[in-house]
Image 1 (cartoon, rainbow, N blue to C red):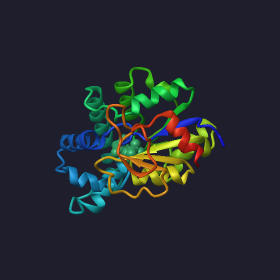
Image 2 (cartoon, protein in one colour):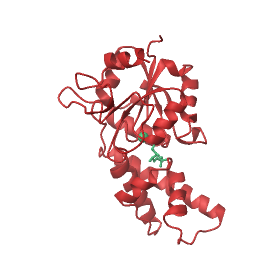
Image 3 (spheres, rainbow, N blue to C red):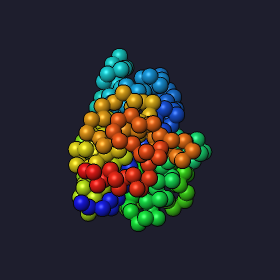
Image 4 (cartoon, rainbow, N blue to C red):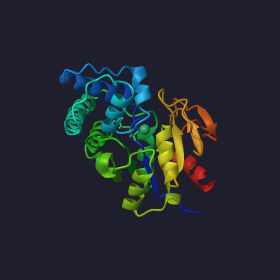
Length: 256
Ligand code: XBP
Ligand code: MG
């Protein structure tokens, strides 16, 4: 049995609860700037999360939820979506810079513990690299992006989650086999991507993903938990003590 060499984290919904009060708000601000009456309320945004990637999500919105909007020709639409996405990224990173979004319970504790034990950490996400950088630097501290042995983000692979490509890309960068790693995800698309790459996958749910299908994942928890705020176990064998630590992860990994 291999030791755990690396923990690979999804970002949105896993490291931090970024969607409702972060990405969604930033999209709406970018739309308003362009005089577009596209308003993504919380419920609609939950449906739009079926598609990963902000540019892809805007197209999905137009195809499924705003078909009456008069689209420009293909090239102009592509340019508009790129422009909106760039503005949205500015709004989103600003919001992170203002410290409005923190890490989920247990994330920082676990990252410090595994780093101290000499285990690598990495990122596999569909969000834009600037967003990952802004989240890490504004929560874990300046220079913390460098703690990650690989950051797979955004358009580095053309096929976003649920395709397994981003996890395969990260494994390739790390020169590791899936059996040497554990993935952390929050959503069905993320679960499909990680498991598709052969990774043992631990889920922490959030309000948008509670009813997702997490079949094949090793355990489903509401959060990683802290000594003073234990996690709730939704499926599988959770940590008896109430929080995920390295010893618990090693037990999971050995049981594979
Ligand atoms: C979640 C996503 C992202 C963000 C928006 O990614 O689907 O697209 O919602 O970010 P993950 P961008 O959970 O894999 O981190 O607008 O930069 O795409
Ligand atoms: Mg996610």
